[in-house]
Image (cartoon, rainbow, N blue to C red):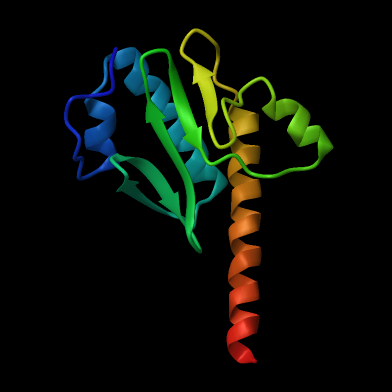
Length: 131
């Protein structure tokens, strides 16, 4: 399966529906997981893929022939960084192969770390504006 030929999607539902059922199901599961992890985030399409935004861009995910990618990879502690190794592909990409179960707890942790980072940056921005 190649990325879908349609490059412009209006909604996440439209994006997911463009894939074969087994991939669409995995995308739907990731969608539910990331929304549960960041319930106040706004869901949108950005760079032609599903994304969440809260105090800046939070997370992107997309389906490919052999995997689902998630971007960007947050910085974490030593324990988190050991978990990342099995999914990391390059500096900013996580890959979840279609032939392996989705790591829902890990995906939740990724979203939480990204959210903490975004919230901290937003607080710094507010503090700088007050000066």
